[in-house]
Length: 248
Image 1 (cartoon, rainbow, N blue to C red):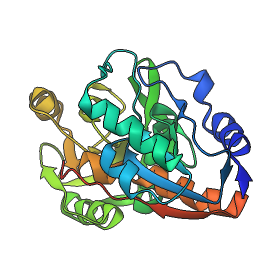
Image 2 (cartoon, rainbow, N blue to C red):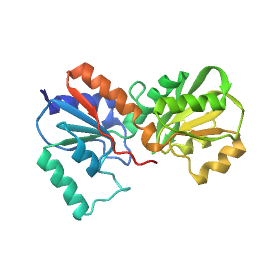
Image 3 (cartoon, one colour):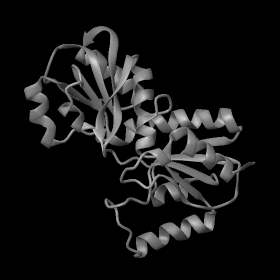
């Protein structure tokens, strides 16, 4: 067993949650049992994740509390969420942009590692924070080949928008809803992201930037999976990944 406050202290420091002011209220969002033997991981803080979690601590990318995007109204939905957390004595810890931006354990850093993208540099701002990475492949490869690598990295299908060069080398990486990355001049030949929306399509086309969209949910499992390994190594706790996929 490990003290909850010891794990929280590590996460706060390692992910630098206090140094990133954004919409998500990162950090410990709900306090449960004071001791932890198993840490659960999930993309979203939702009832499905709460019910499936077998640990005393659930670490998520998308938390419950936000400054403006998701106001809480204590209706039946929220009452059931809190009742479940209280009954299970389950703590919830959220790391949104801190997990996107982390240079080693982050979603984008892990995607870069799996794709073999090197010479990484931060790029693309969200809430005033540079959360994406841009870098280079060892050599230029066909866009279709990179798409296959992305699919292998996330374990699922990706959608390809061939709007630029047939062969790509310079890669922009922003997992989740990162379509805004095509607006950044440093994006490169191709943007690898999760969701790519209608509003950014013509910007990408006119700039000649290819886009590979592999799903918001699947691309934002990556940092959590990297953090899961680190938690086992550092604290010797058991871990599990709780799946509540959206198909988006």
